[in-house]
Image (cartoon, rainbow, N blue to C red; front, side):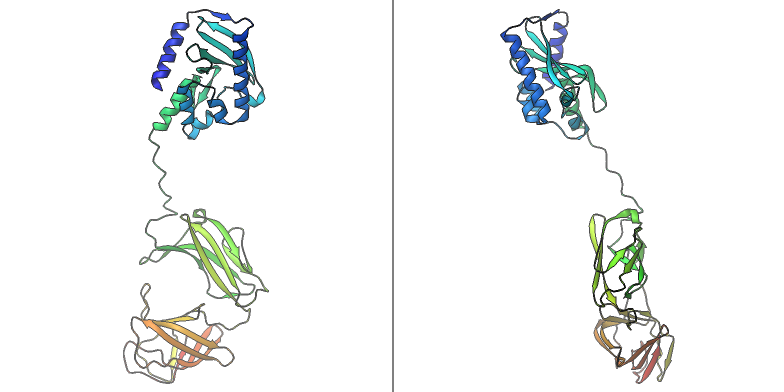
Length: 370
């Protein structure tokens, strides 16, 4: 393509000294005018294939491989003016007998379609009057514009912007939606915070600018500032609320189970405050009940360590609680996990159970206060 452009530039330079001569009416002039009309119709159609067919092979192949980006978008319209504002043929003339031009009036601009005997009846070039700018550079002809577009396509793109360290610290395992409670009651408003797990270094809140595409399904509504979730006062106990968002282009989903406004639920994390009825050397420093009827017991909490865990059932009417061990890092011998539970005034009392100890003999009839 560069050779063709160079040849065109030399040809125009040599022809620059040749006077221009207005064409007289006749078949050749009518043919030029007809081609200008076809060009205008093709430009107005906004279909690049309509325009390409009118050019010589060298320009047609360049148009077919037109690069994307700024230069490609600017060359989608071949004239220096907008053809939608009016495109029609103008004057015609010879230069030296072998070169022929016909004006194309597009809007308030007058370009020249360039033909020569060797390319007839295909368009060899377009001369812009006045010039136009492609990718911020002034150009006078279509061939010059295509060369600039080709050069820009071969340029090495700038490196991508580094990720925002506030959003992507680079050492997280997964993202989740943290809440300020584990009990989601009818009519309650709960604080929600996008969070990432950075174990073994804990968790980290994610700025709201770093997440997108929030959505809520179920009987709840997210606040306009995306910081709290309010459950409907008439939400059916047991119904599910799902909140989703995107972090690092990946979907994150949280699900909450609605409980009745005055329903007794054990969900939460407790620490032993008192013990009666037995002698136990190691207190239970962390007893956790999760919304999915799971539990865990930890005597000496450290990061995510737990001694043993499993599932539980609880009947508020009879106060009976039954814990079933499913696994653990350390399961004490002689556990007694069938007893009573009472939740009152923010305190949890477990009666007739033995949750174990790191040391000492098994016990019976313990009464724990958490």
